[in-house]
Length: 75
Image (cartoon, rainbow, N blue to C red; front, side, top):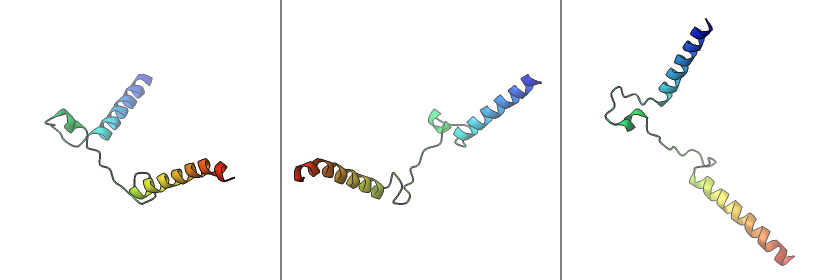
């Protein structure tokens, strides 16, 4: 009974993992057709990969580093 449950759980886990990585092609022409292609989607300006988000963080880091370096000079 326990062996049967373990077997069913293993088959279900394998089917789930295979379903996640399957690209939908039944007979692939090349091995790379087995896995779907990743597509980057840039979202709102607050997302980490957007241009505005990167520019904002770079400016913030530059200002913080400059303030840390120049503060003792003027004090």
